[in-house]
Length: 147
Image (tube, rainbow, N blue to C red; front, side, top):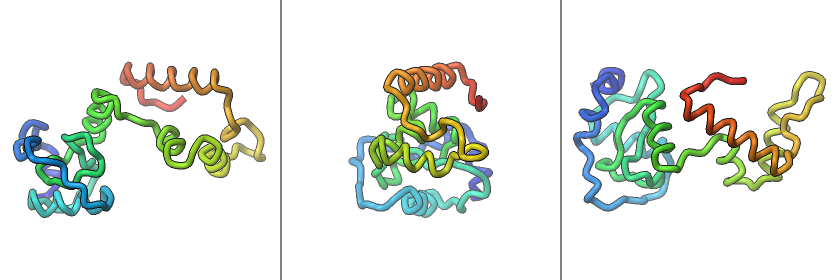
């Protein structure tokens, strides 16, 4: 079955194969390899439009096909928010590299015209808190537009 056809089904139908009574299987690897596991298990073709690999067990390292399902980006983000595991790209970067390195990497890719501006420059703790609150409030209201 083509994944476009599969994802058009309701979320409940797409989750019928789930069995969270089974333990997580952490074989290593990444989401690309986990996608292959689910493609084989559900006999779906790789996607032709953006579709997320979702973990019903909320363990991103799990590759048990009975814990994985195809979902929309909106479903995946809402699930992460509901389970308090949602992280912005900035939060992932800080978790992976630490604040200073994340700020340095961010500054490299976000130079404004002429190299001026404050993008990528370290922010005060108060400024970071206000940004986080603003992003959370915008996400809770369903507003996903950029500023």
